[in-house]
Length: 156
Image 1 (tube, rainbow, N blue to C red):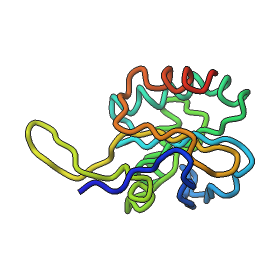
Image 2 (image 1 turned 90 degrees about the vertical axis):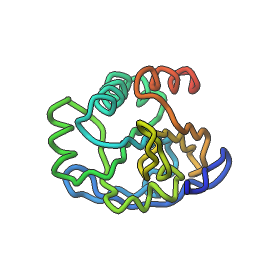
Image 3 (image 1 turned 45 degrees about the horizontal axis):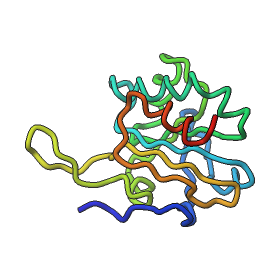
Image 4 (image 1 turned 90 degrees about the horizontal axis):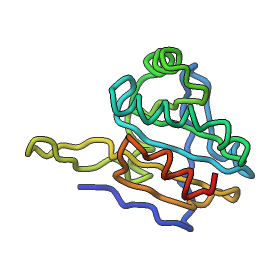
């Protein structure tokens, strides 16, 4: 069972999650600016490292264009802190261990690997506009090349 997917124009589900330093980050506090929220399966794995580093390397032009970048995974803050330090990530990584926010964004669902079905994180990215609405909902993205696609989509 996959949760319902978000559509452009819908209100982005509200959340407050702790970051890598156990500080709360609330989506509502970012209203008025544009936000990119990307969900990834697990910190310090090869694909997730590639994606996270691509966002790091694209952060300056995204910030100049008015975007805040947030990564979300089920990892605990301590692991997120190590991931951030190891790879020089310069944006916040948020912890959602019970995958509640994952569910509200439709990124927790059935996946298949080597012929077996299991529940897991569907790698996805959301662009949220200044009014808190979904501008773009990108599901089932690939780790490699994804950030370049986002930048092209946003004209950044």
